[in-house]
Length: 389
Image (tube, rainbow, N blue to C red):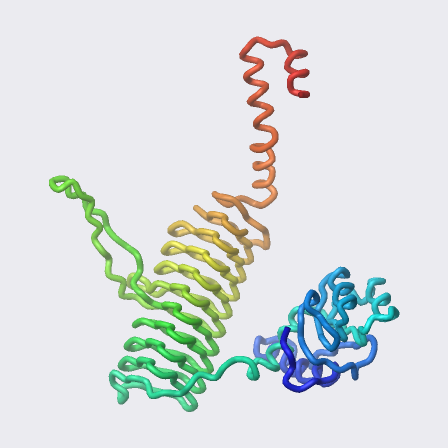
């Protein structure tokens, strides 16, 4: 639960939230029309906190994506709930407003979770600590180009010939290697490392202790029979990492630089914590890459692909545009484009994988039992009776 610094009415919250959402949509090339959110009930209902339905109290604003969440929020005393147009037509919505609950308003919006996030953003400055400003260590300040409004946290390091765009914030302990280019309005969290050859677009976020552009993992194997050894001869990786606008990379993630060309992360892609992106991977635009994904070198991921948690991608694996790879799946070859869910190892269309699992777990033991009885010379009637048991 987040307690608001100043209690506000539903009407007072919706106005700036609508403006912020409109600005965000406009920036992404969407509609610049201010969103309209009808209110069922009293728009002057006073809000003291933002909370999930399970933690709601009197004065809370929540969001609900199904009737049971709305009922829970009303039962716990929430004062207002964000709901979808479909849920607004549900009898549960009418029941909550007519009951003796303390629910004062239902706010109808196409994406309740999205609008709730926008409202959280209105108050983030009241809760997110501001880092101390310090003087970074410059290797060669005269060779650097630092934009207007750039701020540095204590103990940050800036190499030679570095370019940093306006209004970018560099957190404490950030390491920026020689020749790195950082766009405008970026945010580098404490301990982030950007090695040589890295180029960030505008409005990027690199979270704490992420490492961008470190050496790729590539070796040639040389048998040394005289010594009974297999020597791994290292390939120096001298390429870079090119990251588009509006990319976010989570804490402790690692994106390796390419061998001679760049590893590429497309515009708008969001990468979670503890993700490994190997050398020369090409990640498309607007992708989602969830925690503990591991991609070996030279993978090609299409636009708008969803790579869910702990899924793995072998060297050179290809994932088409809009594909969804479920958690713990393994892509060993290629997945065609299309908004389909792929699962298992090797990854198959979800329906095929589920049929295979049913066969393995249910049908295969029956066939095994049938074969054993058949080999023992049992009659078909005896086999039928045994299989019924």
